[in-house]
Length: 484
Image 1 (cartoon, rainbow, N blue to C red):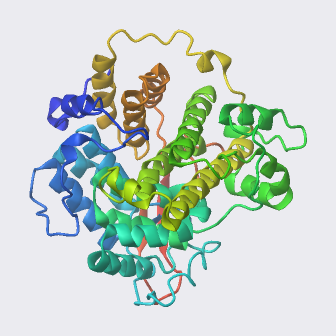
Image 2: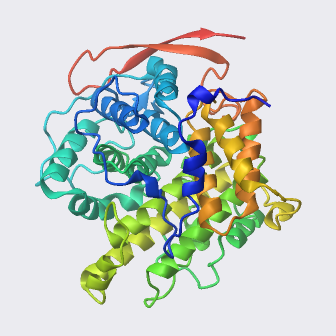
């Protein structure tokens, strides 16, 4: 087992213990030690060695200087903000965050479409999703600047509660990266990431077709729905993780099978169902996706994104019902019986429906892997020293140069402490870490299936990034060293 140098760990044990704190009926995803927000839009010294200030520095630097897409025109996604935030949440120190930036910096591109001040209070809804089928970078910085200005003037609550209902139906756009980015504003307790996330949701907005307005009441168990999907002979059987292109399979499902897939949309209660019912339904979705990730052998890159995006929706639901930045019962008491309370509940239901729809599409597109009954029963999952096991997992995770592992270990640990200490979270975290310690690399390696990324054997790829003309997509030309 690789031992992490202690110099890379700031407060791992303290952070792990903090997740044990009591939580409301809907699991809180924030940790008590975060305290008042340190807004990353304020001046933060790049020389500070304080972990939170270093995290804020990179979040702000990323927001101001880099596009949301990497390796243009291939269009992979910029993970820097949530990579850095996840490292901070796990207890990494400033030196490790510097290393994370160095890992990603060769692939980061300057804004392909700098803001022209296009988005205003009069037209912001009009441009939502306008270029999602082409390139989500178009208008991203226009939206980001507008949302930053609005947050400064009106506060995070007002902007989030106005924008989120307009974009939530299309959260699957850009393979769910917009919703993940938005949720990391909660993880970081920061409004810079909030503006970036809402802007990403706005430009990548792409609803899946044929949402069932009235799923049957029997559609209330996500695991059973996945098993029924896998057994449906009327749906195509794609080759799964080893072969296949995610964009092609998703497009085929949209074109030819959207109505059939709508039969598996999730039941979210009748008109009397409240926030607690929706929160419990989202918890079941997240647990079903965890089981799917484990059943498929912890190896599918796109199911990894389902894991982190279900966490994202679950993180944001309390922000819809209770307000941004502080989960209190006062807001709910003030809204009882009001039209606004019903509107917020409707937004929550739409968020859960949209993420579940994404789960069904990705599940089928990745070959409908069977759900393991032994994993479902937690067979053999005995961890006599869970606290010590988590400290070991987190220390091993922090040193791994990857943009996804830290996020899933963070969420597995939070879920473990906030949901009755389900041992599957420890099991999945251990398996994911072991997967990387045996040589996998999710950025360009075994969390990709064959055919999902061009030049899969690329070891290094550097960009020559130039903006040759305003408002045109010329992007970055990658120059790659190929290792056979």
